[in-house]
Length: 201
Ligand SMILES: N[C@@H](CCC(=O)N[C@@H](CS)C(=O)NCC(=O)O)C(=O)O
Image 1 (cartoon, rainbow, N blue to C red):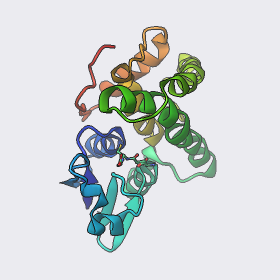
Image 2: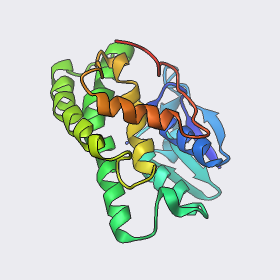
Image 3: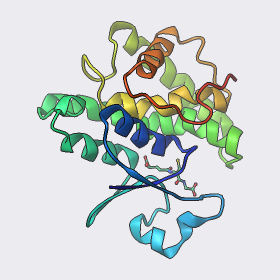
Image 4: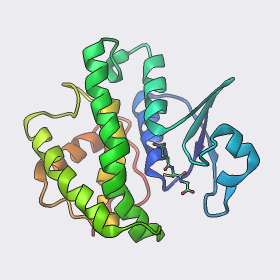
């Protein structure tokens, strides 16, 4: 399977992290966003939105990091990361949705502004962040993992932009339970880092 990838992208890192944790073999195809490779007509055929990550598995092409996590986890013989029952899948999907909405609009947007100069509004990003982080912190005060009693793709989807929040000028110090959850993810066998992971704000 091919993963069209960018090293500093948290969305791509979600997939690389899951693959590392589950020993899933992926061949990385780097896409240089700074050089505009995501606007090449051939890449647009893979993803008309011009975004990474994109997974290609034979004739099957899939965009969106959350969808790719579901696909990769559902193919594994060990269904621990994406179990087959409706209640588990729905519970995990709640958190995949938080990753693509609240995390995207909050810590991810703040990092895009501060690290990459994207023309987004920092006040808006911080309002999303201030609403989000207390909720996440309270959730992992009472349980080790976001969706189930073990790590799932929900944890893989949430980890990158929360761990990289300091690059957006967001301190996680006021959220000790969330920091302990980040440490639990880092301690998983097979864990791999991403550039900027250990930055302080
Ligand atoms: N919903 C998509 C969002 C993907 C996305 O925003 N990718 C960024 C890199 S992290 C991108 O390719 N941006 C293209 C650009 O900025 O032109 C996902 O979760 O994969």
